[in-house]
Each structure stands twice: as structure tokens, then as C-alpha cells.
Image (cartoon, rainbow, N blue to C red; front, side):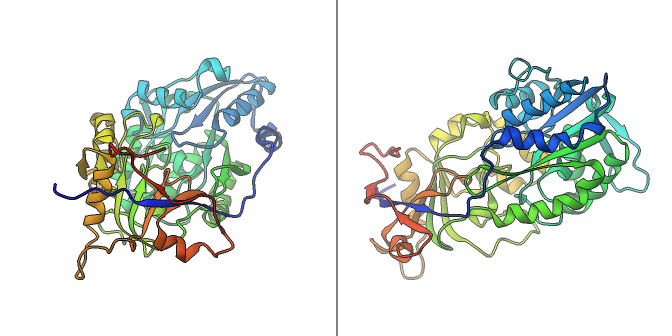
Length: 420
């Protein structure tokens, strides 16, 4: 490549979003759980289903649920409820939970990780129905999950307790079954499948969590199994209203420092970047981002680069950290192969940016120096502090929700490495 790599000078800004939050999360969880005492019988074995998302305060929340069950003279154990994540292996899924601080030692309850399932009668349904065998053989299941807009589809039930009861409790077998129908399976088949699962009586209740735009717990709600379907739709709207977003809709290059399954189920949240890349599904109207670079994987994603295909350029550093077996298992299970396609691989951070900017050329030629519309973010989960180019800064600096908190700085050092 003959491009002369010039480091863009970006200015750090702070976006202000509404910030409702819980100051004492364990107390809020305990208060909600107190209403569920009648659901727990003494001398019973209770499964706590925990997913793979990077949920705020998840270890504290799970520990509070463990203590609550013990206080009712019952015996808790923890199961990973995460479909194909963790490489679709029992060891990998236990490792995902361990990465969040959820182990037998820290929680005071064993972790039973298995991909073995029990098939539940599914007369009159288009799909088969499965449940984790540990959960099925227990005396009851408690679901713990965050409610938020899904990365693949939109409907009355997206990401939350309903989806966890199906894809999570059903493990890899259920993930394959539902995803074999594409987006139709996610949108149309998950709700009736969840009802069939709730009808078994195995799910006692769920702990629904909603986070604010700062990745903080803002709401906790314990819901009986017969309440989940109706109540979750309202929680979803609360979550949607509190999502973060980019400060502008039109961007030339979006620089994303890192991606991972702990950031988003898609690695990069399509709701934030304005890209979906699912065959047959419409692309979001906004934001309109011409080119995206991603530079690293989070440690907690354990090599899973699912969603890298949403980017245009990645770095050699990110590629070298990718576990192709884990990534491919997740992508193939989802059936959304476009998201697994390999972007252009740049040897350095600076070249990744230069190649992305070059792709923004139009009929008038390259983007003129000084007119580049560039944003740099940590990841799609953290958007309160970010860096913007002069063209964007001039557009937003006088807005009441924007604070300029730095001077223009070079993004890359002399070796072409991203500055932290």
C-alpha cells in the first residue's frame, strides 16, 4: 500500500444520557426476591440459569440469589444458559462464567455445566423443544438475565428472560433448532417455545435486569413464570429508551477499540453501528457509518470474534487472538454467515484507519483533509466518553448533552499503534 498514514487528531468529548441507577444492587435484588419466597420449597434442588452476556454486577446478583435459596432451606446450583457460546462445550461455558467471577468457590454453590438436554413434547409446534438436563431434573429453575433490544431482530420479546428460557436453557441443541429457521425462528418461534417451557412448571421465576446507557443496573424485577411473557415487553421498552448512541448519524470512519461477546451478543452491537448484515433483514436507517475498523478482542470473549464481519477492517492483533473454532461454532449455529466473514486485515492500527478512510471516497474523490467525520469508541457498550474529529466536534460542541473534555490528540503513535 502506498498510502501515507496520517494520524487523525481527535478530541475527547462526554455525552450525557439519562442516568437512573440503583445505588445498592444487592439490596434491590434481595427486596425483589423476598416476594418469591412462596416459590421455593424447603429441601429442594434449585437451578440458577446464568448467561454469557457481560451484565453489570452479575456475580453479586447471582450470589444474592444463591444466598436467598439457602435461606429458604433449599439447595442451589448454577448452570450456564448460553446456547452455543463458550465453543458449545461444557468446559467452555463454565469458563465463560468463571471469567465473570462465577465459580463454586466464589458463589458457594456448584456449577453444573453440560450440553446434555431433555426433549420436551412439542405437539402442534414447528420446532422441537429442549431443556438442560440438570435444569429438567431439578425441583425448579430461576432465570437471571438482562432485558435489552436484540442484536438480530426486533419484536415484543427480544433479549431477556423469554429468550434465555429457550436458547439458554435449551443449550446448543435448542440454539441450532431455532436458528435453523433464521430470523423467523428468533422472532416468531421463541415466544411459543417459551410458553411451552413455562407450562412444564420447571421455571419458578426470573430475575430481569435493565441497564442504563452507562452499563449500570437501573432496574431489577423478579417475575413469576406466568408473569414473564407480559411483563418483559414493558421492560424491553424501558431498556430501549435508555440505550446509548453515537452523537451524530453520519460518520465516515468509526474506530472501535475492541469487540467481544461480553460487549454484545453480536460482538459489536448492530443497534449502535447501524449495520445488521442478516440476509433478508432490513438494515437500520441510522446511524450511517461508511467504514468501521475494529482493533482488538476483549479478554472475556475467550477468542470469540463473532461479529467481526460487521466491520470493514480489523487488525492483525485482533485476528491473532481469534479462536476460529469457537467463533465458527457461534456463527454457524446462528446461521448468520455474513457476520462471520473475514474483513480486510491491516498490520497496524494506523493502516486499518487509513484503509478505512480511503474506502470513503466518492464521486468527488477522497474525503478532504480536515473534513473527515471520524469517531473513536472503546466498544459499543461504552459511549459516554469518546473521541471525535473536528468536523463532528464543530457540529455537536454547543449541544447541552455534550461536554468537551480534552484537546485534539493524535490517535496513533509513530509505530502506528493506537494510543490508550
